[in-house]
Image (cartoon, rainbow, N blue to C red):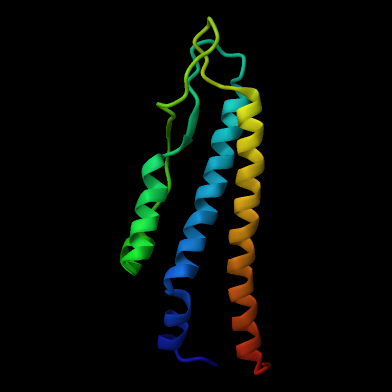
Length: 131
C-alpha cells in the first residue's frame, strides 16, 4: 500500500487537477448547450455558456502551479454577452453554432477523460506492482 503522502502527491499534480477541473467544465458546458438548444424557439432567450473567466483563471493557475487555486476552482455558467440576436424575437441562440460547440465540447471532454483515466490506470498498475 502506498503511504498517504505519496497518494496525495499523485493526485495533487497540476496537470491531473487541471484535467479534472476541465472535465467538470465540459459537463457544465454541455448542460449550457443543451439549455440553449431547448430554448432555441423561446423569444428573448439569451444564450448561456461556460463563464469566459474560468478558462483564463485555470490557465493562470496551471502556469503558476497553484494547487490550492485549482482545487478551489469551480466552473460556472453565465449569459454569453458576445452572442448577438439575428432574429426579431431577440433570441441569441444559433443552431449551427450550438451544434458545433457541442461537438467541440464532446471532444474536449474525451481528451480530459482519457488523461484522467490514464493517470488512474498507471496508479492501479503501480499498486499492483506491474511496470
